[in-house]
Length: 159
Image (cartoon, rainbow, N blue to C red; front, side, top):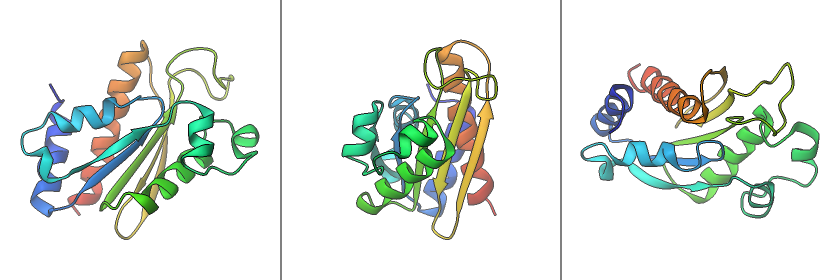
């Protein structure tokens, strides 16, 4: 069952007649899934792609060679490029990209600990980038990230 924030976000998108797509890494499809469980989500949800491994980011999303090595797969730059490149091929009013660290062993550092999530959202007339640090287990981190995405979209849609 989707959270209240996701439900409110979907309802606002339905009311505005805006569509949405997702390109996900750390959330591994859960963002798309949560939006899909809301009544009438078929009116707004175009779909999404899970690009978890570096090879998919480079091969399918055309992230330039060396970019991930320079910035890491979990970075604002890679998240931005994921959103922009996916949005070129999947037409939707809003495109959301999400990367981050839900478990130890990635590109974590003291400045980028587990729980760090990067979000890049393309709206019809602007783009926003956000960085969050959440706590808890991997499921908790992803659930908090999904709610944060819904809040960011709601803030823009309700303007």
